[in-house]
Length: 86
Image (cartoon, rainbow, N blue to C red; front, side):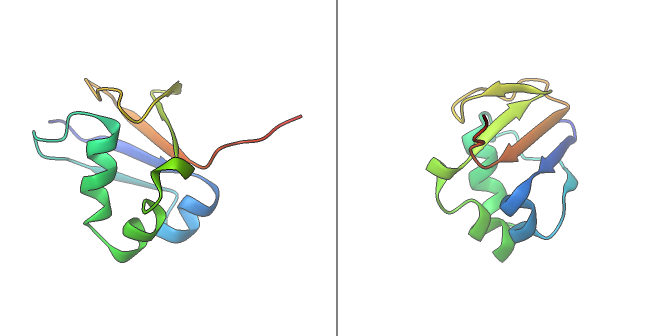
C-alpha cells in the first residue's frame, strides 16, 4: 500500500500530538476502521484518540465517509470529532 497523508483535527490532533503524519499501512488495512485500529497500536496518543470510534468522523481525499469505507487509493485521510454547526 502506498503512503497516506493522515490529517487530524481538534482533540484528535491534541491527543496524538501532531496535526499530520505520513503512514504506510500494511496490506491487511483495507477500511478506514482497519486504519484506525492499526494506528491505535502505534502510540499511546493514537490509542487514546481512537479508543471510542463513535466519537470519530473521517474523510478520504476531502469527501466525508463512514469508518467502514474502503481506503482504496486514498492520498489523504482526515480523522476528526463530530462537528456541530449553525
